[in-house]
Each structure stands twice: as C-alpha cells, then as structure tokens.
Amino acid sequence: DTGVSQNPRHKITKRGQNVTFRCDPISEHNRLYWYRQTLGQGPEFLTYFQNEAQLEKSRLLSDRFSAERPKGSFSTLEIQRTEQGDSAMYLCASSLSWGNEKLFFGSGTQLSVL
Amino acid sequence: GENVEQHPSTLSVQEGDSAVIKCTYSDSASNYFPWYKQELGKGPQLIIDIRSNVGEKKDQRIAVTLNKTAKHFSLHITETQPEDSAVYFCAAHRGQAGTALIFGKGTTLSVSS
Image (cartoon, rainbow over all chains, first blue to last red; front, side):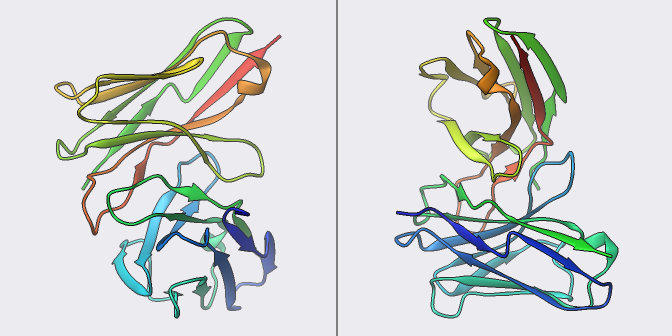
C-alpha cells in the first residue's frame, strides 16, 4: 500500500491554458474525492466518485472544471482556460465504501497560474 | 449545508504544555468528526476521529471530546512536543451517501522547546 499518489506535485501555467492533474487512490478504496486548498484555509470540497460514478459536485466546481474516473481506479481533474484565482493546492483523497468516512489524502498538486 | 467553525486560528505553547482546539458545527445531522494534521508540503493526515454515539476518545497524548447538544467538539493534546507543530483541521460529516466531509479553517500550532 503506497498511499494516495498525485501527479504532478507542482504545475505552473499561464492564464488561459488548460491543465490536467492525476490521482491514484489506495487500491482497495472505491471512493475518491477532490478538494481545493488555498493558503490559510481548510480543504474545500469539489467533487467525489463512488467507483466510476460522480455522485456529488460542489458549486465551487465551475463549468471550467471537469473530473473523471473512467474505470473506477485513477481519476483526473481538468481545468480549462485557467484563471489566476484557480491558483491553489488540489488535494485528492480516497476512502473505503459508504459508512467508512476515513479519508486518506495525497500530497496534492500545487497549481500556480501566472 | 454544514458549516464548521474552528478556533483559535493560531496557538503557541511551550513544550510539555497542553493544547486545546475547539470546533463548532451547524448541521445537527452530522455524526462523524475527524481531526487532521497537516505538515508543510504534505496532505492532511487523520490523527483521531469520533462518532456521535461517543462522548470522548483517547489515543496516547491525543483526545477528542464531543458535546452533541452544544454541537461542538475539541482536540486535546497533552505533553506537547516540537514535532506536534503543524496545522490542525477539524471536520464534520453527516455519514450519508451523497455528502462530503466539511473542514474548518485550521489552527496553526507552534510548540517551542
């Protein structure tokens, strides 16, 4: 068990560009979550998956954001037409099935939009 | 929806002292309350959690208490050590499918030797 893995660790991009992040959850976990964290704040929920089904999306997740988990294993989070306000740490977490809410977080992807 | 308030935002203690961080939640349906520790450059790590059918839980130097009536819960760290220095987050969850874990804004704990 190598824990939750996120790639890349850091991403610097220019405003208007598209970026994609990847998350590999703990292998037996079927729930996967995306959170965003800005400096001095707690993680803010974006979306989560139960296997390949996206079950909830926060209103923070604008139309420019899309997440997928095509085979119920790894997940990708894409941000289109990035804005400076998108600069944040994007955290992925995974957990076992409903009823076990212990979330295990990855180290995150730090996005800087110039 | 759920709202979690956490205080203080910063806490400085001397090594060996105790530290207490408090949180309140708004949704009376919440029934799971974890605490996470986040070190610089890392993701949050679960350190202790409590469910609403329990009033207190201990794990070595760490304890969590829950008052359901008042809708608040607290983290207690005894005999603090420099390696306890980190940002601590409380969170609340309704324990139902289709709901997410909601976090407080965090407390930066500094333990000086």
